[in-house]
Length: 311
Image 1 (cartoon, rainbow, N blue to C red):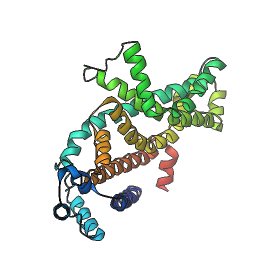
Image 2: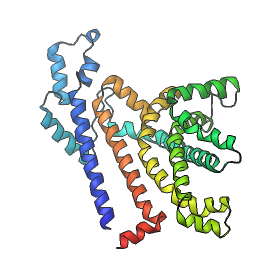
Image 3: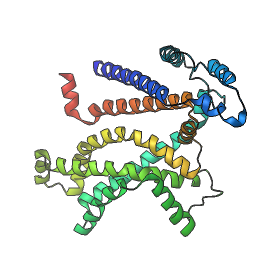
Image 4: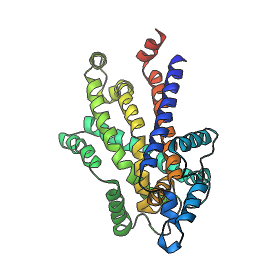
């Protein structure tokens, strides 16, 4: 219980620091959303009218006052209003979040499947050439830009082979290419960590003992090696959640999907700071919660940690 309370306290500190740093950095940017939307000469607004609009949004108040008001509103669940559209930020997030959650969850699941397949074939594949082929995949995958993977998949799977339609696709078909695009770069570091972890665990004394008793390599991998080798990969999966958010921005833009990524891209283009602040806080919350869950899973998977906690 103490461990959980300590980790929860650390998570709160991370959230507070992320909120404060994001607020200060957004405030330090030149210009603001009011000027971005109303400052165009085509609108013909006078400096006095612009000043009135800035006062209406509270953009003319001192930075500490704005920070205190914004933080208090966040604590009460009020995320503010988009300067660009006038809609409540909470409404915009609620509309965009389900699509991104589905994309991120399926992308992470496919990345884990790819990583396990690559790691197993790279360490236990039949034939040296097969092992070397799969050992070379993680460096290749991690070096590919997300937008390039998306364009390549569209060109090959849709335009050349006609397997997945880009126009007029059903709900499931519309997910195939974006999920594959976001999964490939995440699978690469996971596979690399799994390969190294499998090699390390197989050098441990208890594995030699089990092998000496007649266990086959496949039995050892399934029953003893995999459970111990998965812990570093779990940590990496939690850290890679940030890659999912960054990858969603690019992937949703490439495939024209509505979601948090596209909402973020529009907010950046329009300097819509209330939306950007809410997206950063939401991403931080998700990142912190996932890493907390990963930490809590450690004692479940490793009996040595349970015994250490008992002491």
